Length: 77
Image (cartoon, rainbow, N blue to C red; front, side):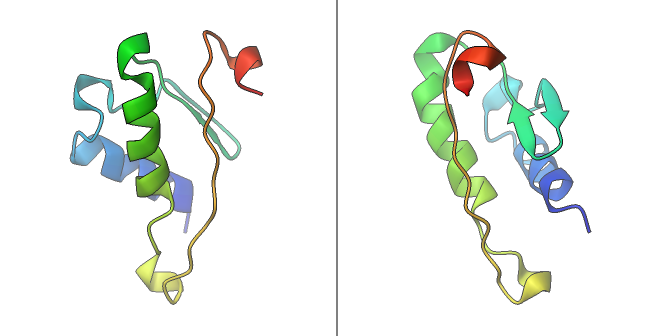
């Protein structure tokens, strides 16, 4: 079971980030999402809540995550 792919599907299917719901890039255990700067903080909170929701099939295991905002990937590290 690829948990990150499942979480990405929820973001997309439920359009949690409006028209920006499809992540720009997925690298190992990271997502890169391109959104307007003025919406970045709000979308960051939505992404964090979505990614940290318990996984029912894994006895409601929760996976901590962090999210950073930056103009490019290197500034998010």
